[in-house]
Image (cartoon, rainbow, N blue to C red; front, side):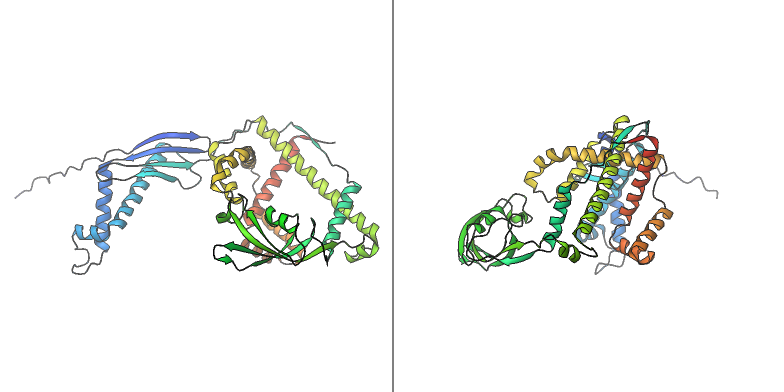
Length: 428
């Protein structure tokens, strides 16, 4: 008996995910994504089926446990599975519809997931800014190398003397700034004086809180005193920031620094120098080389600033905010000071962002990135200077996670050489 055509099962189309742009700048996009209820339910069914298949529940054969039993036992995990799948689906829709080219994974914020309601969330994603460079040369900058002065040489020699200075005991008088003190400091609590901690501090070098240093300056060796100290808002220990504490201070010892005489014997103690004049000549030469390097750095920054201004390179707020956030953590700034810190450092962050955008755009446009051959040559040079093998230098850099830093440095060198070739550098 002939069979008729099989009935067609109607599968309703899923409701569309909606993506609404809420904010953008040159380096970021923000969207509000709403995933309809039917798509959320479909994801829930897939999650339940997956956990039912994998579940091992006593009293039921594998894969045969009722859905309600599976849901009860794995409810949190199923919900997490649903969220991850629906968010992934919504993000893919946003990325495709908006033709996004993200530079890293998106950030998901303000997620709303309630039974019987669409799942909604905000997607914030960083994108590569499009920098149009219309002028890279024709600039004129000055290279200024200041002469090395006798005062600079003297200051450098004094630093060398300090490195070889002896610390001699001071008896019968309070310390003065520059003296080294050995002290015990003990917190005073309700139940009495706590166990002291010992410190060795050079007064005036910011090695401890100012209130303690003020107390040291009032004491004789062997004296014990009590004082109230207040920890600064930027103290390394967050728990102590802005707090006050009463302490007991015991001053055990005071020492003064005695610099060695600046003579031929001192010069010989510093290395292979015949006399003081030879040491002074080397110090002057080192300072002159440092001045040359500083002048070259000045030229590079002038050229880069000219490129930034000529091409109207702006600092996208999203990248500035990211830079400020990084500075905040790097300097251990307390949360309550964040707003003031951001206001103070925003110009610094904006300048850094512009600089990085300009360098990246020039390197990409002129194909000036560090190559494998460039990296190998630089590592070989470092190995020769250190008297070791390139493999050992490479391993050291890799272990210290500094290979990327070296590559970036080589790229910047190539960019700056290119910029110098396109402009005029005048010696001032």
